[in-house]
Length: 378
Image (tube, rainbow, N blue to C red; front, top):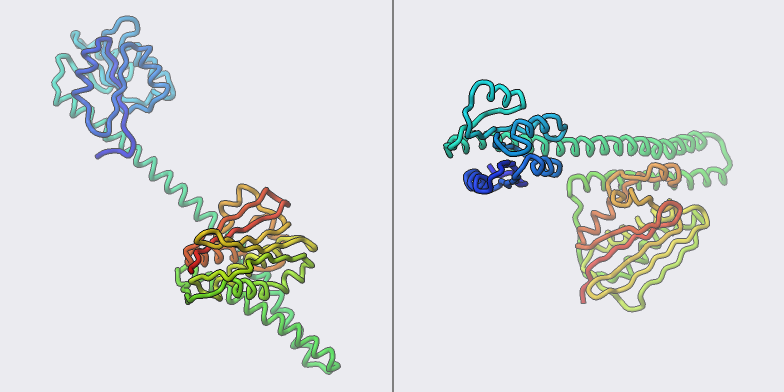
């Protein structure tokens, strides 16, 4: 088996010809040989490389193999590296005891039997590779666990927001019915019916959002594509979001192209993309802010920008802002209602149109710009 990254092994011998012979003997795909002519050189290599096996010549001038092994065992980084001693001298019991005491796993007498050395080294190479695989699997499990915890936290936030969003209109409808059952003036009854109608509309939008959540999760959002004119879809989006913009007393400007821009797209979904972005801007912009919608053609695509002077998006959140249920924690108290799934739906719809979406924000309280690019047709 070959690891995803090369496995390093260390050869230490003061004779260059011995190093070359051992390298040729052990080399195979997926292995990298690190060679040192002295104990000092070996320690330098061990400081910068992860090593699966060290083969040390016992008899070297200066720091011999036993002393190098003792240094390795004293190092936090190198103490767990298996060591095989290679010796041309007599392997008496005293020398073997010193070697095993220094941390050796084996002694091999010179002249070396190639098949024996290959077999013993392969055991440690395979063990190192298995350890690498276990570490990768552990990291993958940790990442998956973190993703599950984040999803669970988003789900809890979503359910809390949903409960709040449902409780208010349901309470208003219940109160309205209670008052209508009483003897009240006709003018008051008409006002109550208007408010009840508004609450029913709000509940209908919530149900639509919940259905869209299900479709996004199951990948069941489909498009009814046809040849449409961008300006018509943008005007539909403005009309759909105008009441939210007006409710926040925002200044709104639209800079749309004079010429017709044609798309092979779903008119309703394109309008929904832009309306969701406009509603999001209105929701997270303090009263009296500015919201701008611009569109322009760029070669074979159209670029649609929705810019606001709202609460902005922290840099750390910008890469996750399109995740379903993802909201900036501090923004939950600033939003004027909603389930926090609009941007996730927008990204899904843009992708279905073979387009892209990105966000730009200098940070909190510095506003945001959402940029949608969609392919055009002649």
